[in-house]
Length: 233
Image (spheres, rainbow, N blue to C red):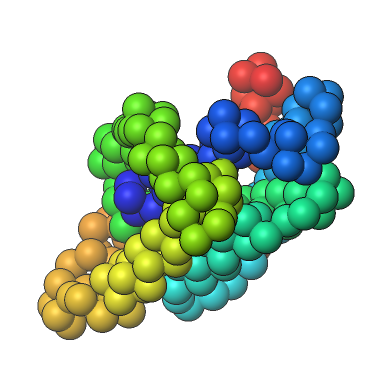
């Protein structure tokens, strides 16, 4: 999950690195248009996080759902190498934001299905470490890709999107093999291990909490009605 988050962060930031190899000149973009291309990713990224988690909560294989989204955003990121105009870049970035919206809230949801409340904080903290690793090494990886400028007649910034997008697809496919689903249907666990994993969570939740008949949407609305949420905001 941490490796996927590193790739998520790198794919989100590679446009800034592409600026160093002339993407603005090749696509005839002004500084303002480049800033728009950077920010438009969040137009799709922010509003689609909640619908994505409403979908993932209904699935029996959330890990596969996350990995499929990773593979799709890798393909979209690689397709950025084919854009020939500013408006095409905007379209690709907006779609990329929609697909990348699946990962982070989905990852938190999947982790919460495996770990108790006392354990979850450390796992989420470890996930954030992946973001910092991507921030630390993303520039170095981009620098290496940009050195391929002119290879086979392809600009360096186009190679950047191709290589990082292909790497994301490859890691997503491998992750789909090893990433577990829910504890009760995890393929990598024995039947006894599955029972123990489920029991740990049920023990913490308690019988009363486990018997509550509250759907995902109702729980979402209850969160907004909680006065503590307003105080935090």
